[in-house]
View (cartoon, rainbow, N blue to C red):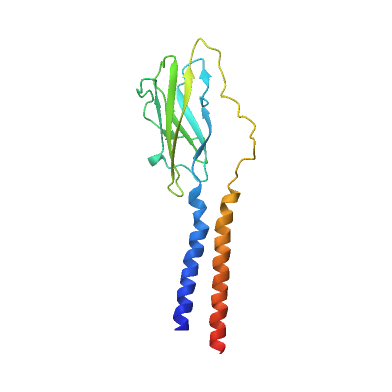
Length: 183
């Protein structure tokens, strides 16, 4: 009876430990690191392509990643050829070609990024404006944060507490089963 309880508790503890170690891995999602044209910028001439660099923990999987560029009416103005940038060995950059002769106006870039490692999908969008008559305006500068940004380190604290508790319970059960054998 004690052996069955001991084996069952060890299997249970092992499963809990593995789950605790993998929860943090799946919680990260792709975010835009930079883009050309930059988000919320105005450019003096129509670009020939849109390039988006992601800040991600794993390379992107092109089978589920895309960039779609639309004009103000919602018409697609890209060539549908989203690809990973061959110059990026980390496989974190997507590129899509644009139709030639884009008119002045505001364009929306809708992106989808599929992480190759954990299969997580992130989506978002940003805009840029083409205005041949206007001076080029860079993307708005980031404001100084009023508090320090989260680095993700705080997210692991509850998991570490859970893992520590499971280990302590497992150690207590192990000691208890050893003492029961002695008596």
